[in-house]
Structure formats: C-alpha cells, structure tokens
Length: 280
Image (tube, rainbow, N blue to C red; front, side, top):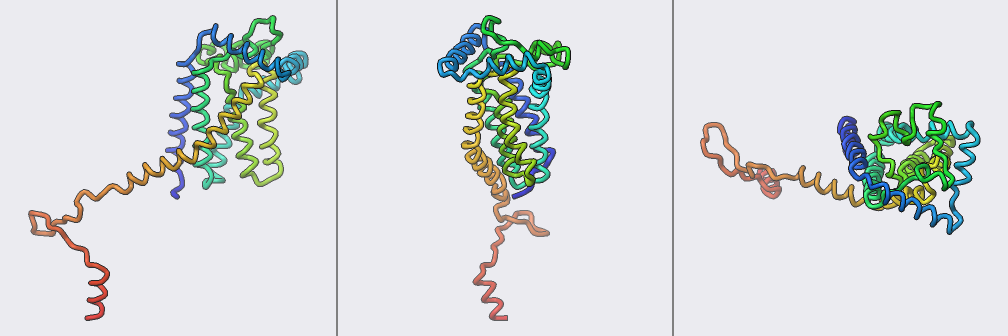
C-alpha cells in the first residue's frame, strides 16, 4: 500500500476538524433543553449512586494544587496530545496510521451527531443550588480562559458549551491511550497509554465540565467508530480501485505514422509467441 502523503493527510485532517468545529457551532441547542438533559443525566447518576462529579469537583475547588493543573490540562492537552499522536503514527508507524486516523475521524463525526441529538448542559453551568463550581472560572486568573469553558477570554461565542454529551475529551484521550499502548515500544509509553485516558476522565469531572455518563458516552462513540472503520476503509479502497481501473480511452485503437484513421491493433497471444519462438 502506498504511504500516505503528508500534505494530503494534513488537508484531510484540517477539513474534518473544520467541519466538526463548524458543526458544533451550528447545532447549538436551546438552553432549556440542554439544562433539562443535564439534570436528567445528573438525576440518573444520583439514582445509581455513581455521581462522582460532586466529590471530585469539591476537591478540585478546595485544593488549587489540583484544580489549577487540571484546568490547564482540560484547556490544552485535548488539542496537543491528539495531533502529536497522529504525527507520531504517521512518522513511526505508517502501516497503522491510515486505520487509526479513520477510526478517530469517524468517532469524531459520530460525536457531532450526539451533540446534535442531545445538547447537554455541563455541571458547571447548572444552577449553583446543585453544588457545582466552575473551576476554570474560579481559577481563571491563572490561565488564558475565562468563564466559558476552555475558550480564551472573549472568544466564548466560538464554542458550543452544550456539546457535553458525549465527552470527546475522554474519547480522544482513549484513542491516544490505545495507540500508545498498542504501538509504543517502551514501558513508559505504554504506561502513559493507560494513565492519559484515566486522568482525562477525572479532570473532566473534577472541573465540572462533564458528567460520568458523558465520559462513558465518549468511550462508546470511540467503540462505534472502531467497529465502523474497517467498512469505511474498504469503501475508500473500492472507490480508489475503481478510479485506478478506468478503461483506456483509446480501447486499443492506435494511429501509426502516416495514418489518418486509427486502426485496431491486435496483441499477439501467448500461444502465437510460443509458436513463433518454436518456428524460429
């Protein structure tokens, strides 16, 4: 299989990410629906006794040594680690790059479907009576963000704050973890593959940006993308194969020097060649 061209891959990733980012903005749900969905998720978790967001959020709020690094991690690693792993795969594991990239992109687009169907208010945007603190707003003096998720101050309008279900912070971190664990060659790389998605899950809940079910949904979306990726690759190969196998326009008709009308040139068969060789 031909090695992917870096400029083609960069263009493809840029187009998919632009479509994803633009789609997030276009599918902003109304606040009432998003709040209702967020409260439904919270009540469901409380009913199961799995609402780990409250104790983590209180811990991150009360201990700046945990809350501030968590805010930096939430605001940056999502956008740094994933591209870095993509580049690493492209350069060091080219045989596995195409399948990994397809898995990531399909899962990302599935996440956009989730944002469209289920706009969800994150814990930090619920009424204060529900007991959550927006740690990024609380510790905003330490970073570039304000009170609108991880967006730089004044650019909150360029993000969809109700795109919480599923959590692609967790989904992308899981993808990175699988890549590092599967294709990394050192114990440290494999350990990072395990730690990164786990730490990301704790961070998104402790900063009150996601519910536990958002994280579960992020993992589920990645699972669906993994199942669909082989079909997408086969379809792409089939389309590419058809493009390469287009018939020659001349269909065997050729024009020799001095001819104005092309004539059909027959190709000697193997039998003819053998016969000629025997006669000679």
